[in-house]
Image (cartoon, rainbow, N blue to C red; front, side):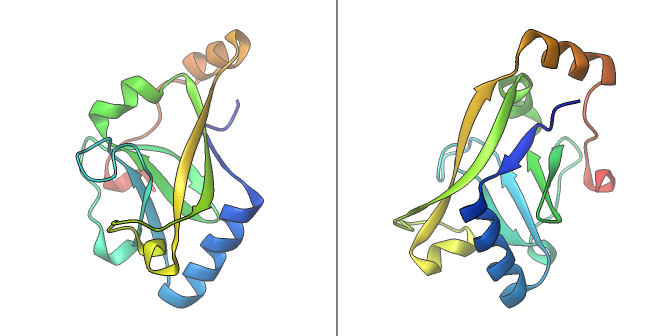
Length: 129
């Protein structure tokens, strides 16, 4: 089964640095008004996963969730988490470093989509990780 979320080497390196400084982290992508579809990174203790949040995967030992309403949009896309310069105005933990995480996506092939469908929906809620 193909992974639903992957990470670039640059983003993986930044995640490791942030974990060393801040402890366990969590990612959440909501599509909300703040930062749109940018993945947000928080200290795990500072973010409460909702019952409808969907666990898409784990990157660098950090759970990566999307909001339940957003999952239908991302269900057939592989998300690649990358990093770029320009932290902007963000609540995400990396913004203080002058950088920000970004999501790039590609549509799963028919064979990959079939494998995902056969595996069933990903877990959701705080107990998923």
